[in-house]
Image 1: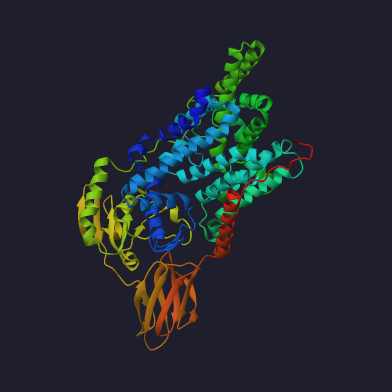
Image 2: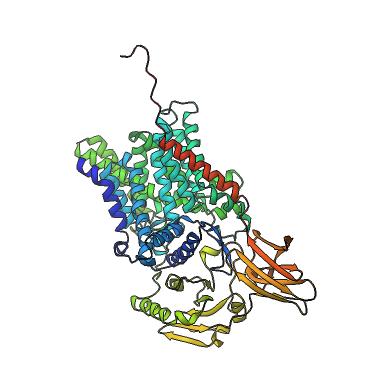
Length: 629
């Protein structure tokens, strides 16, 4: 057992990567949001090449704030791996490196969180159940959410929060500058992986402060150390998090309502506590909660409070007490995502009940073994009596997430390779009859060129998302070709075909001017069109209104001969574009920093300096009393 304890963390990492073994040979899932992350990683590398982490990009929906609304950590990591290796791994290989780190890190974070209560062997058992038995569901974590649907950046945020919570008790009890660094940095990374970490960390960490308050010496010791960790994490993530929060009013509303409170209790015994989780976990977790509370010490009591607290936060009960159960903000925060953590801790408590029963039988503690056995049997009996079928738990209807066969992917790559020279410098539009399919985004890392996805894209649900199938609008938006994986319908059917292969075809779009002047006799000429700088020359007898076929954002500023020219949004056939009014001459448009970006960046730099000081400074030695020898 001592040998297992030494190698258990490495074994946990190995188990995590085995959740998707192809990461070892560079073959990531090409399903659902994985393709979105691949496409965004290409854009992230272009940002890195220009020395930026966030900024404006004309890469996707006719212009959008790149990595300003979608969390940047995952995309920047994939782009960084591709950039640092000089492209030797390819985009799939670079993606697999980061996805493998997520899988291994997720497993390690859960292991180190459960090990103090379960021990190394049983923590590995719980980890195996979470990885290979728990199927998961939408907004609920598990394989369905992270690997099938590809929402693994949210899973990375969960893992980083769990790792921070695993280290926080040592900080609360012992304190010290260096002890604060690890959970603080983990929290900062979690916030950059997904903003839900903001509402995930603080309630669970507050429970640790309450549980470990006495061990920390009482008074304000534990709260002060918790605040130090929180300040460090918030400061490190401020450069992205603060502008994101300040621009929240521009976000499109994509919400998920909390579930009724009664469903939580009935789910424990009915086998539907969390989608995809085996139904027997609920009753066993109830028994394990008693074991953890009485025999698990402070960490065990926190595990009980965190498990049921996280599940309680998925219901309308706590928000009803505050009068917020129907508030739009609660729906938009998608509090049902707390199930992604509650399900992991539930499995840990269920395994703890089995561990304690096995230990009682091994040590021949008859009364203890008998009591535990009766409680376990009673819980499972109630579950079966309440109709807790199927034993494998509930999950969403089976869905086919993998987009194409290996042969079809090879054919698509060959088609794009042959067409690359004739496509020109314009944007590539991607069309699938189902607007929510993201399969054709696989073309973006193969071409590394700006694109326009016809339909819905999770990464661009903010700040003026729009879509169109009209060839005229596509031409104004800089599109020169449309790639589709199904027969064209509507206006797209009239476009000339450039090439076909199997289910794929590419159609040509006639390019049209990106700017247009409205006054008679006036004209607008594009002198330069870059992501964050556009220069125009206006000619004509008088001032004119100019429409720019690019998405509007308040950070854009326009000047003519040093004088500010007002910019305002223009709604054109569902597209939120930009327009200005100026006289003849040269007009320059520049994208400036988002509101709060400069002070937030300064705060992050100062926090980094504090981290460096705390890491490099020598720890203070305790004072030596005069009577010591």
